[in-house]
Picture 1 (spheres, protein in one colour):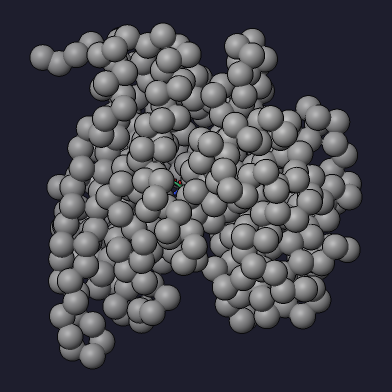
Picture 2 (picture 1 turned 90 degrees about the vertical axis):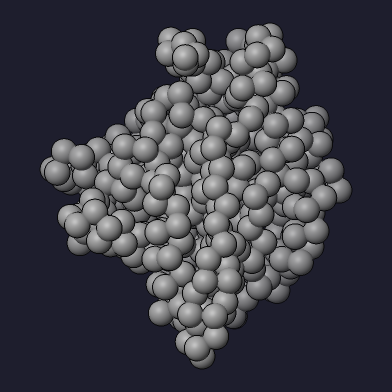
Length: 422
Ligand code: GLU
C-alpha cells in the first residue's frame, strides 16, 4: 500500500486521465474548443465536516463530490472511503465514469465522490455518522435526477443504505433512486453486488475467445480481492480457469496448481485477508502482477502497472477491474509485448450497468428477476466489447484507445446535439 501511494502522488491520476483523453482527442482530430471542454471538470465540491468519534473527540474529515460531464444524462459514480483519497484522484475517477457510461451506452454523465478516512480503523457507528454527515454536505448535488452515487473502494450496500435514508429523511419521503448498490430491502437490485466482477468475467470470455485461449485451465492472477476482484476470480474459476495468485492490501498468496476458491473466499471472510490462507506461498501484492499467467486482473487501486514493472508482466489478457491501474507509459510497453488490454472503462463497467438497471427499477417501482438482470448485463458487456474490438481493428489502435474513441464520440455527439447554453 505504501508503495502505491507514492506512485499515485507522483503520477497524479487526473493528469493521467487527461493524457489518455488527449491522445484519443488527437486521433479524432477533435475541435480545439470541445477538447478544452471535455478535458475539464464541470463541477466540484470540497467539504470539510465534523464527526463525533466514539471516544467523544471531534474529528474533521475532508470529502469531495466531482461531476465531470453531464452531456448524456444525470451524473453517476461511486463514493470511495480511503486514507489516500485526493481531489485529483476523484477528478480522474469522475472523468473515467463519463467515458465508462458512454462506452456501454447508458444515459449518464460521470461523477465520483470520496472521503479521506480509514474505514478499517473506524467503528460502524462512526462510519454511519460520517456517511450521514457527508451525504448532507453533498446533498446540494445529489438526487435521483441529478447525481446518483454508488459503492466504490471500501464502501458497500450498508453505506448506500445510510445515504438513501439520510437523503430521504431530508425530503420527508423515501427516495430509493438517489443511490444504487443499496440493500435489496430498500430498493436494491438483484445481481448488483456481483455486477462488476461478473461484467469483467464476460469481457474476459470475449477476449479469450478472440485470442483462441481455452478458458479451461487458463491461469488467472488477481491483485485486489475486494468485491470486484473476488467475484471475477470466483466466476472465472467456475468456468474452469485456474486462479493461481491473489492479493489484498495485506499481501498475496500463490499456488501454481490453483487456489481452492471456495476455501479462499471463506478464509477472506473469516480472517479478513487472503494471506491467512494456508495452501500457498506468501508473495507481495506487487509480485502478484508479475507472476506469469494467461489472464491478469488488477482489481485494486490506480497506477499499479507502471513503466517500472510493465516489462516484467507476462500475461496475454489484462482485464482492468480497477479504475486506472495502468499508466500511459506502461500501456505502450504492454502493447509492444502483445498483451490484449481490456481497459478499465470497459472491463469494470458491469457495476454501473447494473446500477443503471437498479435505478430504472427504482424509477418505475417495479422489480425484475435476477435472470433478466444477468441477461441484460451479459448482452451490454458483450456488445460493448465487440464494438470496441471492431473500432480497434478499423482504426488500427489498441483496445484502450478504441474504447476512448467510442466513448468520446458519443459524448461529443450529445454535446453537439444539445448545443452550448446560452
Ligand atoms: N464505483 C463503480 C465504478 O467505478 C460503480 C459506479 C456506479 O455504479 O455508479 O464503476
